[in-house]
Image (cartoon, rainbow, N blue to C red):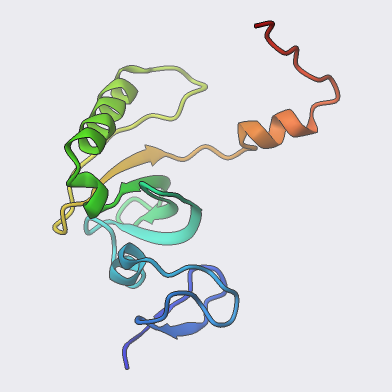
Length: 145
């Protein structure tokens, strides 16, 4: 049986599993395909940052440049929906127009051979906004409706 490394605990697991039997990390079709080969020939998965209904987000290493990036994937099944695909492309187009030191840049958003699309973002270290807001000593005002 062919195995791949779990992206959370590193244990070798069979590709057919739905999750790692050691740590419970979900194993998606996309992860089965790219756990042991680079995404788009250049991004090696380091860690999954999130998973949702439309796709997944991974922290990756650019294999040629050695830099850290974040890759956002829209699944092939979702990508085949014209509404979801248009929304993804609209988000990518808008993201390429935002140039600010406090916003990650989006240099690429190509398609993959299976029909899925991805956005390759510059990676910025730090806390995510929900975590930062939860740690704030001063609660933010609530809007009046």
